[in-house]
Image (tube, rainbow, N blue to C red; front, side, top):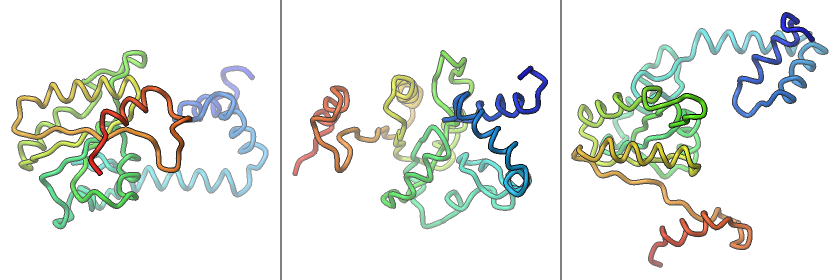
Length: 200
């Protein structure tokens, strides 16, 4: 395949999506090419509908309808505006909502510190976060970030950036996953579980 081949162009575009490597992108591109009937038409229609009808919430960053911006989570008066849960990506909001145990508001950073990818604090929505803390009289910021090295660096930077504000900063506890065995846990997870232990 040369660089101008439509199949190659499709493969390159698909491989830019998170979780899809070059080989998976090739398989998807070939499948779409082999089955050009309803599958490719349905995909094109779905992508067009996403482009036309969806957007990132101007307040929290969650995915919402263009006609509902700010989103329902931001405008629901039953939610506790004193708690602000900071996540890396809008998909994290959906996961926390499914858990059903948080009733505050959200703020998606739209990434994390990643020097290898050239992503610094200027790529994150930190200024908007600070503005929301002031405007919405937030009392607690919960850092619900991942547990990798880049996320740890992001959490440290945020804790430092917010340290001068009248707000309590907390981070999700890390530990052994439900249904798992200690023998399968890595040393870092075990250390965090011990450090974050709670009274019974």
